[in-house]
Length: 104
Image (cartoon, rainbow, N blue to C red; front, side, top):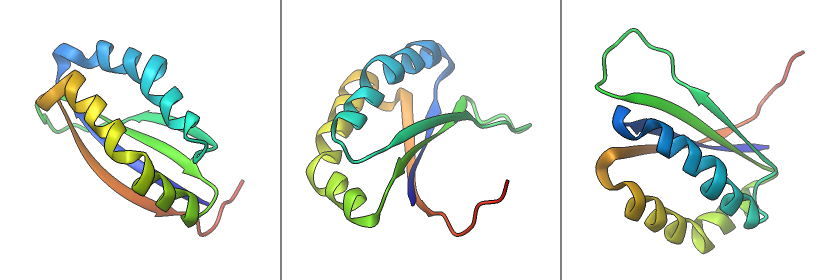
């Protein structure tokens, strides 16, 4: 399993709007690509003042082929939509995580 992790740094003035938009529009569009099995949103907890609020959004993907298909077929359009909606009020940092072990 792979996780496409998108860390978003959100200006406080648009935090609620961004969270609502993620739930109502962006995450459903991501799932509509049929490349991801589920999504988790985490609020980043820190004692450092970064001038905004950070979230880690984890899109779970079954394999590399599906992630690469998303990146080549869908990512650009969905990035354009978020940029059109929020501009520089939300900044992103993207990473890929590969599950090595899971313990209960």
